[in-house]
Length: 456
Image 1 (cartoon, rainbow, N blue to C red):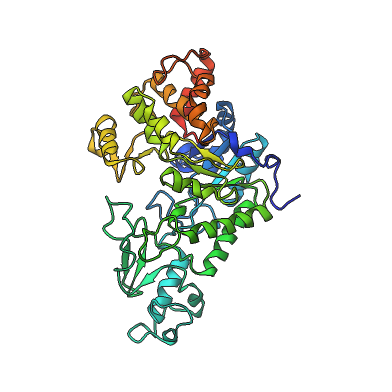
Image 2 (image 1 turned 135 degrees about the horizontal axis):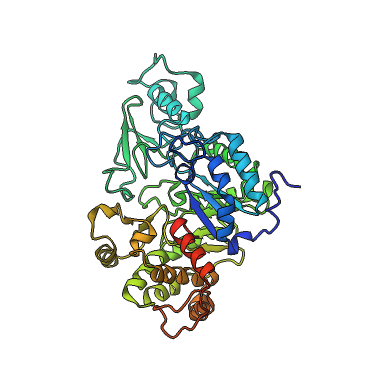
């Protein structure tokens, strides 16, 4: 049996029809009354999740973290945040989930770390001593204007000097957009100890790892192997389009990124068969589909452009936005699957719409400015749709039908047939549909599923 095999890892294409429930351990179930969820509490609720019809659980980051970005600022990739439990608690959860034939997907956040991660602390000390130049450079013998007698410096720091992207100037990579416009004014931040700038595509407290450094590749493989060897079934690859930086590009979707993802996939397939990599590539369909490669990069990829158009179609009472984006969606390899969803992290992201479409969505779904964040809308599904069960069910029908079409070009021809065969009642999207009535039990399950979790 391959390393890390589990009873749930038999079907290599298990993800093709998975129903994935996204949850944050800290907010799900508190077992000890300290006001914060934990793995023991999550174990208590596994029967509930199974009863909903969930087949996989996607856990948001649960690692040690300053929690300045809800856990996506990771300080230690090899442990559990003590507020949520211990590694033994995680192993117990994993075993309990597999006993119920529930698969577990965790986060592989590799674009960036927390600035409190020991890797970054070592890196900034090494840069303070030697300067932001490539390892092996003649100037690495000493930094003419730097710190040569830093009491915090150790020879152990030097291997981490190039773990992050450092520069003496913030003028590099000017064509890269700023993603978190509400919070950041630059993709560079000044480090007073290193006396240099470091690169960050997200928050300034999340420095980006340097994927031009082979040592970073090795470190990521160790993280990957650590969790997959425990029996984790899938890894969500956070912010995968931004791994590399090149001048005169927007630093997204670069060929080097696809080459790296191909290598990571080969590593996973060789050591951990039947596991899954889920790419978070918030891109237009053609760029997003490229993350499947030839069936040898990511197994799954979120379909970000489709999601807001489902809500647009609901409000317009017109299926055109859905059909239009499906027509723009390329065919994908047979061993891959789009992940369809109604939101991520309770955010209706609006990056993959036109400016006119974004203004429309703000006008109909986010009249309160507090509901807007960056280029998106932050509201739970129920309040977003006025707690209207009929509309909530209708939003689910488009997702289910599109997901079953697998995102290929044939989906545009099959879409209406698929949606006719779906299990949800008459939809205003396509008035000619006649579908089966929902039983009260099924109705309750779908409503709880859509309001309580996130479907992919």
